Image 1: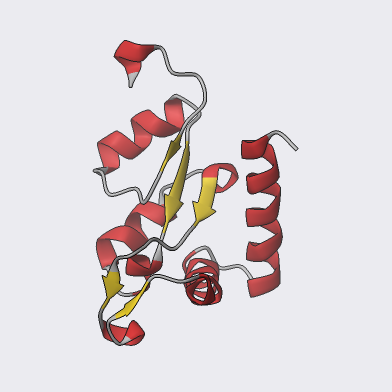
Image 2 (image 1 turned 90 degrees about the horizontal axis):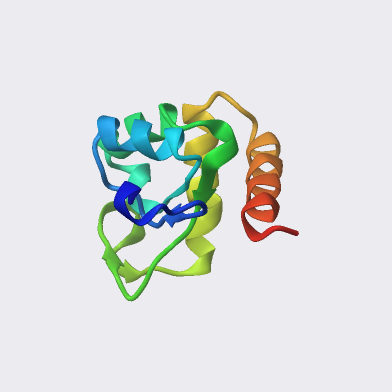
Length: 111
């Protein structure tokens, strides 16, 4: 991304290394985490190392998710579970996490 002089970006469904995450934070990029974070320790660690002001959540599709999602395709109804998991990792209440994500979304979208 540095070779393209990108100023504003969202790294969708971030799956990079801690080093890449730090570079994204240095570049002031947003990163999003999806349902896999609920059962993937490496994604939980990445979330815990992400600047709180740069976190977004999302689902994705038509990816099918195992474990707690019973091989269902990604859907909006998964978002509360992702928020709940993120709130536990960041030691926030569900409502605090929801407000943080709303603020981050508005800032990313410029509204």
